[in-house]
Image (cartoon, rainbow, N blue to C red; front, side, top):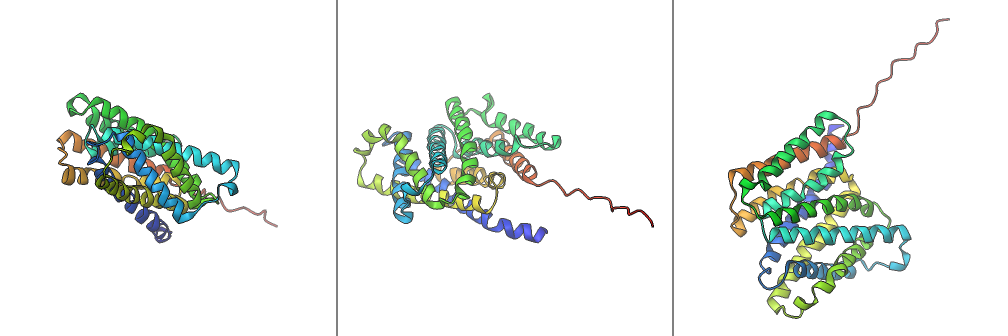
Length: 295
């Protein structure tokens, strides 16, 4: 049984790792453009370019989608748009690792509210202690950046839920392409003024960020959710804080205090415990052997 569970998790683990790495690399590429355009514009244009690539690849037929699929695609797209807008606003103000770690609280909550075992719920206190270490007065982080990261976490929870719904829907990748297009269009009106001012180099970086940080990660997350549940996907998202912290230090020169490192570890470990054990099915109840009346 353990071997089967391991084999079952191999594909989701690989997919989430690739998606997480793509997200972090894309965030680094996009962050380099914050000096020439707003975070709203950079996030939106990145999604617009990613949407074009997905539409060309999968060529969805909107007329074949049911009302339920349109509803799912719209909520999924809106959650993607808002999750990324808040995350990018946070990254512009606080270290990448801290922003990604707070964002990870969203998937944790997806599992937490369905947990019945009290001992697993106690790990939520560890996660809260981690957030306090990351965002408390002693951390020295920009308070507005922390608020933006918390807002992003709320929409990341919604994203995790609908990634499973879309992944297991008959619409598949076509529905994902529609959702990403919706995500781009929702915030496009706020980005047109910056789009006309970007040079060729900036558009090249945005195109790369769109492919690496939109096409690859969202395809990977959707496929992972098809092979497993939203709770397990939420557990695997624990890789993102670690990757974000390492890449932020190496490529952005983020400074990590002992409080910040300890806080990231607390949230990551607590999140894994909550999501993993909360997602595990209850053990089967052994029935007593039936006692037949003696003849």
